[in-house]
Amino acid sequence: MTANDRTSGTGGGRRTSELRVRHRVIHGHRIAFRMAGKGPVLLLIHGIGDTSDTWADVLPGLAQHYRVVVPDLLGHGSSARPRADYSVPGFANCMRDLISVLGIERATLVGHSLGGGVAMQFAYQFPERCERLVLVGTGGVGRQVTPLLRAATLPGAGALLAALRVPGMHLPFQVGVRLMQLFDFGLGLDAPDLLRVVDALPDGSARSAFVRTLRSVVDWRGQVDTLMDRCYLTQGMPTLLVWGDRDQVVPAAHAGLAHMSMPGSRLAVFENTGHFPFRSDPQRFVNLVHEFVRDTEPASFSPEEWRAMLRTRRPHARGEERRARLHAVG
Image (cartoon, rainbow, N blue to C red; front, side, top):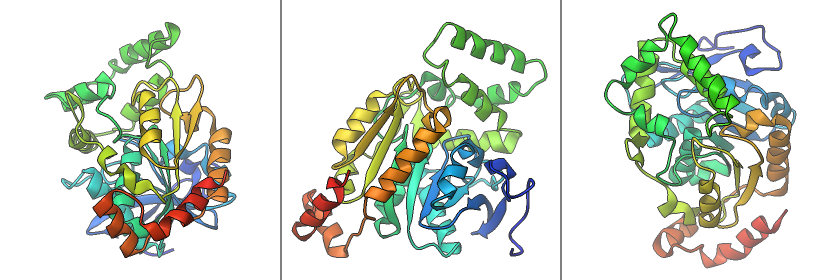
């Protein structure tokens, strides 16, 4: 363990919260991550306001087959919360730098929500470093997003989040969560996880980082930007889409749009599930990821092929047959 590594928890446990938290200082900022297992690398990227703990239920199963790297994004969890770049491209750069520092050349990226947008941006910026994509309830597909996130971008959102930390204010919020579940409102399935995310914002710097991150991707009208104009570049990049059929945070309708827009992608829909399918049915998620990695070859782009796709929006002729074989598996 280097001077930049620190220990948290008991170590050797089954959940991410029980794994040693390691730190690397990159560009002067501390990046926290957990790591387990051996084999091909999976980089798991959490969503906005969340932490690496969100992957707790799937990490043990994935670590049986892979070297799993689970970071806290800058501004989240145990990572530093500076006044810095909290944009999707900025996060993609940070992920590239983290795996570089760890001596990892290439990885399969697994991204949830905002993390899915970061994973797609990573694949676009650094195709030579990305082997596959697993996108879970991903952002970056369409404009629609839950009104709660749109409202959180408005002036005063930071003060409202702070108010939820005031003693006595948490109870009404919990009651609201219970009512949503009781009457089967759209967000009822995800309400406990949304409450967990709010609880993961312990102080003003965390809330500030959350709001800065959110405003980089969402405004009062919805998602600010999408990556749909670049989806043709996923030709040759094995891609698995995972969605809950009752996702109200990032609408489940985005699953079909992404699937149609990403040549050769696979789509798995979890029934009666919200925005966190990997938490609703961890074993199914682990099995899906393992089958996907097992049945597909890592992406491989030459500069010539990448240039041809950018020019023509079609795969390079010499790569078409190889890519067809790649996606025919399974």
